[in-house]
Length: 462
Image (spheres, rainbow, N blue to C red):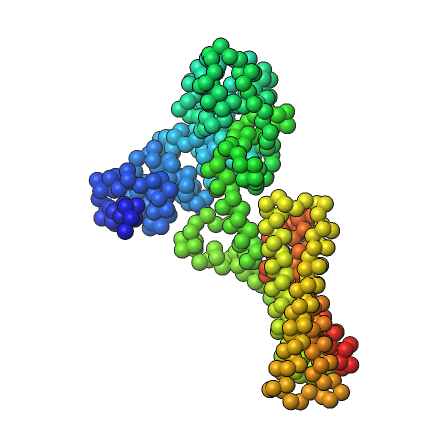
C-alpha cells in the first residue's frame, strides 16, 4: 500500500473515530485534492466533523476542488466569519468559481463577505460566463510597463509576488494598459538594471478574448504549447491569464461532456464521482434521450409493416437484415466519432464540409464494397449448407448480389451521414456530440431497413 493510500486510510479512520488530533495529523500529510475526494464520499455528520476541525486555509483549497453540487452545501456549514476567511484565502478565479456554483441568494450573501480589496475584481470576473475564457482566468499575473527599467520592473513585481500565479511570463503593457509584449524572468535576471523593458520584450503571438469559449482557450494552449495564455478585451488590454492547471480542468470537463452526450445523456454534467452521484440524477439524465430514441425507433417498425410482403415472400431476408442495419450503425458511429474529435481539436472549419464529405464518401464506398463482396461469398458458399429452400428463379447468386449491394449502399450512406451530421449540428448551433452514437444509430437503423428492402424488392423481383 502506498503512503498516500495509508494517509487516506488514517484520515477516514480519524473521521470515523472523531479523533481530532489524528485527523489534523492525517490532513497535514494529504494534498487538498485528496482531501476533497475524501470529503465528497463522507456522510453529512462526517462532513460536519471535517469542516469543524480542518485548518481553514487548507479547507479553502479543498472547497475549490469540490464538485459544484457540493460547494453551496459546504459553504453553508460555515458561519459568516469562516465564509469570509475562505473567500479571502482563495485566488480570484477560484473565488469566482465558488460564487458561480451557488444559488443567486447565496451569491448575494457571500459577495457581502468579500474583502473590499477583492470585491471589484470579483464582480468584474462575474460578468463573464462560467464557461468563457474570462470566467476561467486569474488576474494574479506579472505585469510591468514598457517604459520601466529592469530595476523598476523587479521592484514592481516584488510588491505582488505573494499573490502572482506565475512568473514564467511577465506581460508588458503600455500607458493605456494595452498588451504590447512579454518578458521571461531570465530576461530580467540576466540584463543590467538600467536596461529598458522595451529593449528586451518579446512579441505575444497568441491571445484570447475574455468572451471566447473556454474550450477555444484550452485548444490554443495545447496546440501552441503555451505556458500561459493572456486573456484580453476588445481593446487588447490584458485582463488575466489562463494557466496549465486551468486547461487540464477545461479539457476534462469538455471531454466528459462530449462523452456523455455521445452516449445519450441530457442535462448538465455532474462533477461528482459516479458512486456519489444520486441514482435519481442518473435517471433524469438518461431517460429523456432513451425515451426520444425509443419513439424514433418506432419508424423501424413502420418500415417492417410497409415491407411485410417482401419479407413473407422470402423469409431468408430476415437472416441478413440485422447485419445490414448494424453495419450502418457501426460505420456511422465511427465516422461521427472521428469528425467530432477533429472538430474538438480545431482541425475542421466551416470551409471543410465538402472535403469531409468527399473523403468519407470514398471511404464508405471502399468499406462497403469490400464488406459487400465478403458477405456475397459467404452467402453463396456458406448459406446453402443450412438453408435449402431458396426459390429456383432467385438462386443464391442473385440473392448474394442483393445482400452485397444493400450492404455497400448502407455502409456508404451511413458513413456519409455520420460524418456530416456533426458538422450540420455545429452550423445549427447544436453541440455536435448530441447527434452522435445513439441518434445516428437510430437514424441509420431506419435507413438501413429501407435500403435493404428496396434493393431486395428491385433485384429479386419480390
